[in-house]
Amino acid sequence: MSNNSDDWKFDVPTSGSKRLPPDPRYVEALSSQGYGFEIAVADLVDNSIDAGARDVVIHFLRDGDQLVSLLIVDDGYGMDDAALDTAMTVGGRREYEDSALGMFGTGLKAASLSLAESLTVISKTKRTRAAGRRLVGAGFQTDFQCGVVDAEYCQSLIDRYYEKPITWHGTVVRWDGVKDFPKHGGSGQTDRYLTKVINRLGLHLGLHLHRFLERDDFNITIAVEDVRTRMVYLNYGVEPLNPFGYPVSGAPGYPREFEADLDTLGTVKVVGHIWPPKSSLDEYRAVGSVQDRQGFYFYRNDRLVQAGGWNGYRQAEAHLSLARVAVDLPPSTGDVFRLTVKKSGVDTSPAFPAALEQATDSTGRTFRSYVEDADQVYRTARKRTATARKAVIPPGRGLAPEVRRVIEDELPVLPGEEPIAILWGRLAPDQFFELDREERTIVLNQHYRAALLGGRRGGLNDVPMAKSLVYLLLHQVFEKEYSGSREKDNLLLWQNILVAAARNEQDRLDRNEQ
Image (tube, rainbow, N blue to C red; front, side, top):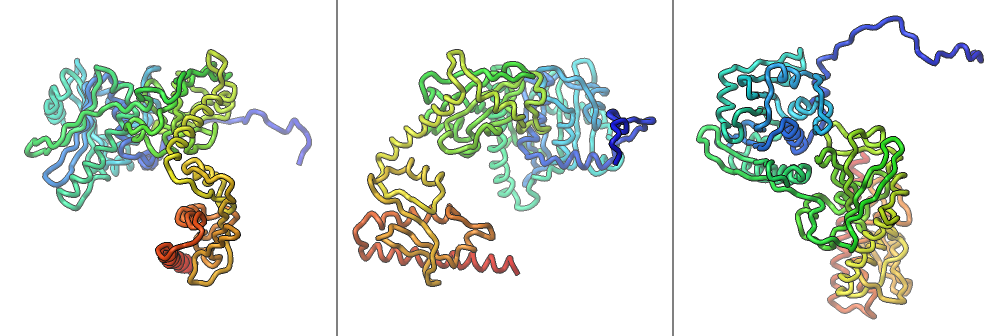
């Protein structure tokens, strides 16, 4: 190895260049992006909004018992032949306005070909005739060939949607061979599929495009029609689902606007909201699980691109289920915010959580204090609920501190009582547990520990699910001086069932190891 620094080239020298066109298999990779159905459809609706659409119709077409096609129809500005060619070209570039929802120019092809065997786009502008292009996934992957759709058919499809919603101009995106559509099961299976998917799709669009749907001049309709009889089975208007749509704030003085100073982007405003406890509104409950729906809600040009998550700022926990933070991303996101291609999440650099630690509102109140307030509102509400429940002896050693904390939040605790420990010990094979009243301990049978761990390493606080259930079953035994005949029978019942379940887990583990 030479120690001469002159040997090192800080700039890599080149002696020429050559063009390397993409391999046709690039299309296969493009169509393997793993789009979910709702995310893919939302991506196409984004294109409609960028085209100035006021009405978008998502049309499921069925032929009797079978679903045959899905169409997304809009009354936007439309595309001429040249624009259609660009839209259907892999890597085709067009200039996006700063306010556009589109970003990379891949959404139409990637979203469509990941879920359908073919993609047809037919469009008409105010000054040009209807034109269309068609991509068949299998053929397009081989040689990038794109079909030119017959002009007469193009016009007939535009006419089919005259005033529903197309007037002078608009676009129809058609998917055939949709992979999600049920192939068997008859009308009943098709009806069940439509009920499930339309509900999910309506919630997804209502949430991620709620700011657009709240306007008077924008609508999305989901409809189902029979292609032969023209019978309309469903005509459903998507309603906005505002994740901040509570009638009254959960805490006085909220929402609050905090300013996070990011050197490369300047100041980014984050708005902390606290939902009222125990809300039954869809705007609160339909967003996701307690863990999913708390945290940051990132918007880009009024389109929600991430619904919940703390992005490295902290861990999700039940006590923060009322905390939601609205963040409108700046036009230039730099290296701090990176959107996924599918616009279904935001990756943030360490600069963002670091800036939140210093973020304050106009009164000097910190963002950290907002998190503490949201935590306190939740805890206070849970304590009010817990006072109506019977007091218990709390759990102690053997159960993870996080689980113990939730139990003590949910249930009032008997003062001055020694906690109940849950530990492993040697017991007869026909016992899953044994109670030691004097030591206030639930002993679990060491023989079944490996089966419950499922091959994972154990520790003092292992198998929290099984230990939590055992505690909920047995804590009352320690709160009584003696067990009556009915309680003894219950103990025997639980013992037998738990032993049978543990043996089943043991057998399954043994089979997997063979």
